[in-house]
Length: 321
Image 1: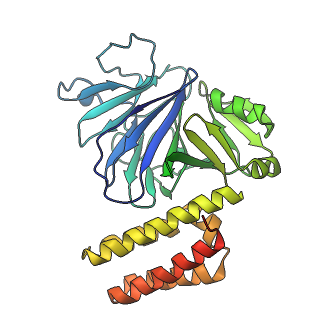
Image 2: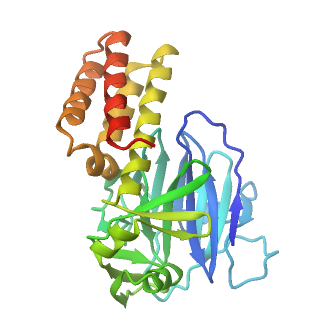
Image 3: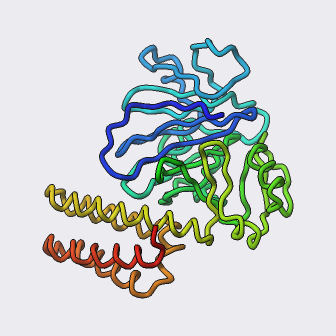
């Protein structure tokens, strides 16, 4: 069962994102709007007592469901544009600490920037873990999907494909998972070993890469985990890359700024998903480098569209959908 919040996003691109988390055997989700910023973590004192901040309870808590006051110990997804704080569950305060405005998500086209933020914007006190890797204090990484660990909460960044929502996990790395996901790893026999962390309900899991690749994906309600390296993962990611490149063509026809297009292209090629599925193909990689070069030099719209068409043709031939 997934309890979701539809945040009334205006669709500006073909890529749509959603944030998932699990709590007490239930899955929760929140739609993420294009070009918006969201904070994950505890709230600063000034927001806790700001009467203008709307309270929305998405996750369960140790308080009644009709509780409307914001709690200092709770982990939130905070939308500063709409002034809404979505409660994801109470932080116990006895395990892995969580900073105020711990992590920042900036929603782009084809990727999401994840920043270790903290209350002053200089980084959290306890670190943000993205796809199994600890960001440096104040660090930034771009992802198309995957896990973000903030204190006691494991969040899953997911994208939509043909009516379903997908995230990804690299089975060759140590995986951070909740109890619910860990049980599915064990049930499908891809779990080699696991151990507890200092955070309540966050576990470290070591998977069997060959079994995970054979399985390809793991469904948890309407969220599907793709294992990087599998055929289904490459098919879906390449399709999403093609959609984003087509979005760039639309932006060119609408006369969007070159700097905006350059930001999307550079962000796209820096994501793990892009590296996993494209960098191994010499022709596609070379054409993407030419595309970046063309955008940087402000070449003609026709030249950039020509390069995009060639790249999309290669992607479609690699893994036809």
